[in-house]
Length: 105
Image 1 (cartoon, rainbow, N blue to C red):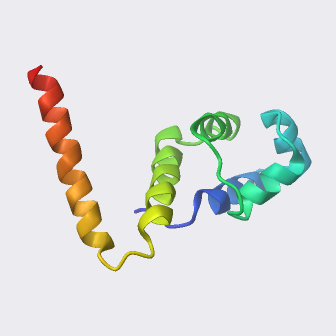
Image 2 (image 1 turned 30 degrees about the vertical axis):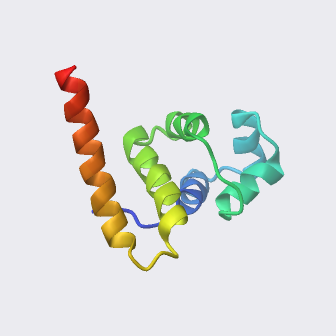
């Protein structure tokens, strides 16, 4: 089953589930505590390197966290578009086309 929580909420749940203070996780990630707080509140975006570090710290599934991260990026970009479903379908077709073209070359 898909986790529909934003990546920020998932990070907060991982941290709180491990009973880890915000300041400790921020120190482990070598980022400012306020930056981590903003990420957890979806006021700032994380990056893939940070997601991978968090997955390692909490021994969590890196791939699932990255899927959630990228789905947040896509959703944020197209959520206000009335034809978001068609945009996703065309994007999926383009990805398949580009992958097949790379295989042939």
